[in-house]
Image (cartoon, rainbow, N blue to C red; front, side):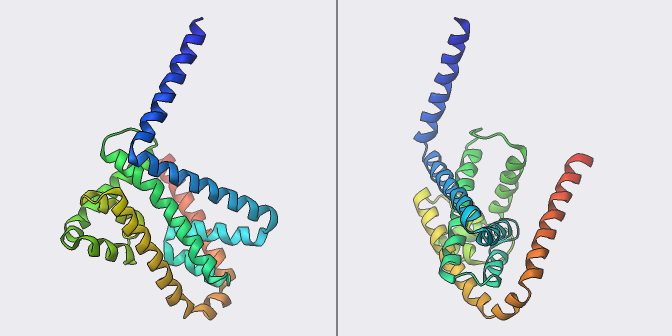
Length: 232
């Protein structure tokens, strides 16, 4: 009897958590991001089964974009001679998922809601808060235009994810922040494709070396993280 009471209490807590989670706008945004992430994995699975060569390219673009940024990811796609329209849409898809997942987690963290306890993510959000505060006064001065330029700027700690954090800090509504950030991201991807296309011949010629370089860089980063975590 005690066992069933415990189960009922646990289910009640989970149901309450789900209901309160979806009551928050941030929770709804995060749910959308997770749904898109699920769609991404389905796309990768289909490519792995039916288009193995395409699977490797998509995975390389994703890893490179997430770790090294938009320009590196797009360069991989151009070097692979991927269709420009598909490359634009795929990168926009990746960056939208990143924003729709990390932005609500940042807001939850800012509001001291312990939705997810994962030390590396917590450290990332804490560092992101510090960096976002650095740019907050400048972007706040120029408002929407400042946020657009921030997302378009190809420098470290700028871009869509950081831009969404700053948009929240300067007081924009979720809808305004995400609209500005995602629209600016789409424009930025198109601009980068146009610029990178000017070096397409060189990228195609060295595409294999570029792929190997990316995997070596990822391996070195993972090794560095492992050593730092276990031997500090």
